[in-house]
Length: 371
Image (cartoon, rainbow, N blue to C red):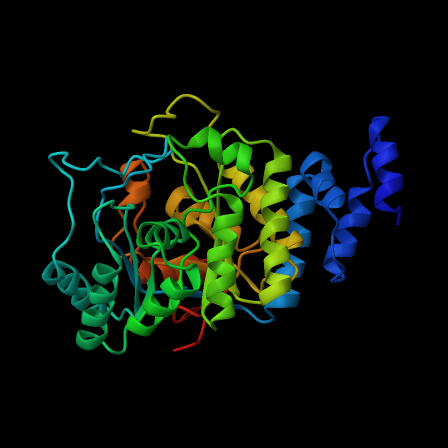
């Protein structure tokens, strides 16, 4: 295998590292370099990527089981100061349809989730400028008292970073206080693409930078919490930005081992400020990027397929492109729905999609523990 330095020189002359050799290396469990991952984006066919990613998935998650979870995305507020250009969900403070859900409404939603066989909730909002840490602590404590068995997977890195900023507290203190109030794990929202030039282009105002997003997850891992890593791509970034994102996730996982899963999905443009601005990423681009993520992230055990943005059929195909999990049946989802993605799935539908692909469906908990 050529060295990275030798390949860099050859690529400058229009040559590309042999993708067959790169794929064989990944399948065998060897780590891919930045240049090798770039080569897969540049030159590997969708069929090559799918076959290799599926082989890696089989090695990292042996057997025929494909997991899913029953939970609910509860957005406690839609007010957000960041006003990201890719988001159709947020509202400015004072808008007629801006809201903060009362606890009784949130509790009713959790109760419905439990009745449907759910084991956890994903609790996220916009970044509301008027809410302080006592609001978040109080909400967590009330939920834990009312639903002690429900896993609280809550508050993205930008939310937590903003709390630390407005409270003028160390990030470590904020996470410790939220954890003490009942927070059990942190979702990967707010990652978008972990490459700052891309992030600046798709924001309306400054939000948690790549380093700050990583700092939140690093500190959560340091305190013994598990988190997920996500990527929302297809916002006009180049392949190099996607590679940078994968490398940042891999590096932090090397350091902490705290990520349970990697969850990529595509930007949905409807009703956003970016509508019509960038080419829409379809199923081909999604499956290609999913497969490369499975090959690059050799230290993240689980990769989740996104039927929510791509629909059940592409979600089913994702099981042959590196995914070993199909996420949640999502009793409620508001953010990507606001941008035009309206796919829904019942428990029966989820199990049928998995079974029809030749796998065994298995319900899991938030941290990938079996029921």
